[in-house]
Image (cartoon, rainbow, N blue to C red):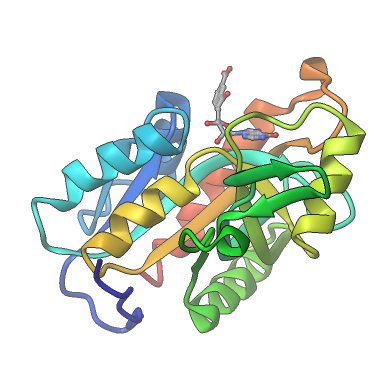
Length: 225
Ligand SMILES: O=C(O)c1cccc(C(=O)CC[C@H]2O[C@@H](n3cnc4c(=O)[nH]cnc43)[C@H](O)[C@@H]2O)c1
């Protein structure tokens, strides 16, 4: 498996591939990009397996200089409030491992590889600053990839203990990142917060507002990418 290349923000050769889980997210990103031809926005489906397979399919064509996993996500309340935008500083498969009598063991601890994909730190910090300057509430931090949307305070607490500083959770980033790593393309993740990680309350999700934040984020970033 190839190592991730570093991202050169001033190089304009090649397109940027953006993978969203569902069509509503894809449309929000496309509105933000307003026809910028340097971007390709495709569907990853829900979950890391679908995201890995469909991202790999897109990357097989070649010519991409970066991949972004983008969409709505759950925010960890003390770090990423509703409608804010999180730029990942790392992408972590937070439930990939084994349950033991002593608690959860990650694949890293089990010796089966790594659950953590690094993200270019300078780029993540730069994008976060741009989003904040553009009027969004933005922060940078680890984004977790989970197979099951967190629905209890106990699971939220276990995840923050597992990954201190975790900013958001979603379901595709790690899959997108594994496909990117396989061909040596840098990966990023951007999540607009539609709900807080914790006790399930679907009525409190603010999907429309989060999609608006997602659109605004890409409107801001299209100027620099
Ligand atoms: O119902 C709709 O109109 C609608 C519009 C856009 C997106 C959706 C989704 O349900 C997207 C699913 C997608 O969202 C991510 N997500 C959002 N919140 C969480 C969370 O708390 N924990 C994990 N994932 C979350 C996830 O990446 C899903 O693929 C609906």
